[in-house]
Image 1 (tube, one colour):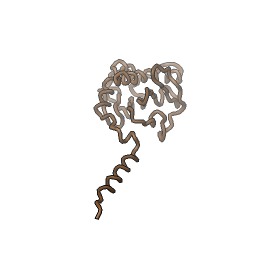
Image 2: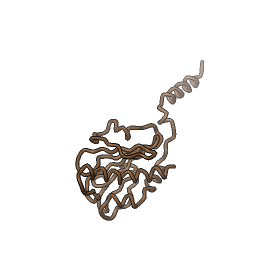
Image 3: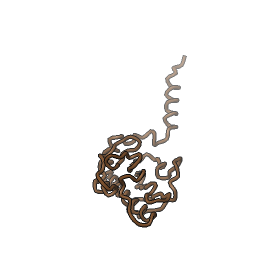
Image 4: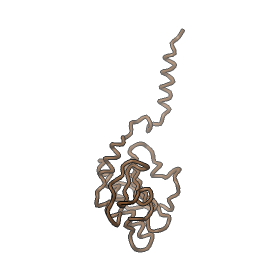
Length: 175
């Protein structure tokens, strides 16, 4: 009688080889994402709000989030989603995600950046990508947010630039 061990080893190896490289590779843990979120400079966060800012929310429905004191990031704040070297471009390409309107490019310096616009005075999303590292920021609501004055699309573009500063902080901390 032959041992089932060689067959079992072959099946396990076959299953492992069938997994995508991104799944096989050990990705960054929550501690890395928390460190990067904490690297966001306070002055860049304060520029997004009209008054006092609540402490950073780590984890939850995003990697980290910011809101005005007394508000919740999911309803009135900024949610931050990070993807590091995992080969996943879902956030950058918004595959399988809701529509974010028309995308426009922001100036690039060592990174690609774009923002979505559906109308109004805020961008629907801001994405920055450096290599295989994606930083996605989604504003929600307007309560407590420092929405710029001027024409709606110009205000949204200016707010997108303010949001981009948060991604630049994260990129700098990742180096």
